Length: 124
Image (cartoon, rainbow, N blue to C red):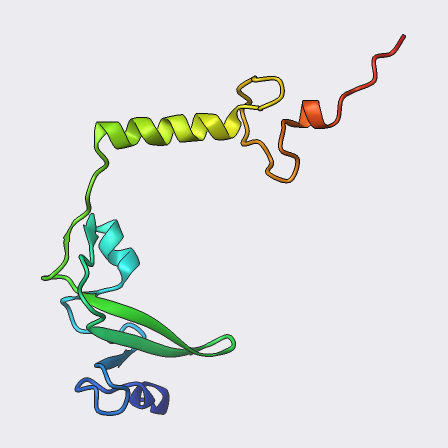
């Protein structure tokens, strides 16, 4: 085992407080939040079970691990929630000045669509 790996090998948590493993050194049964999401799971309120540490750009990097056996399936939005999200997104694309639904979100810095904020002069 290299010195770098040995520096981050703490499976009982005596040095870092929680079990710590080196990059790609975690045993099966642990997953990061992204890995859980890719598998269709969520941490479901469980505390961080372990961590991975490695030397990276800017110093020591950490990724937290959760137990896969305690993870639960991801929740799906109800039809009412999906409808509310659709209405909210449509409202973000509707200009309050001309009331036109644009194909982009109205910039908050302008408060209206680009056509209303910067009207073109009509050539005579």
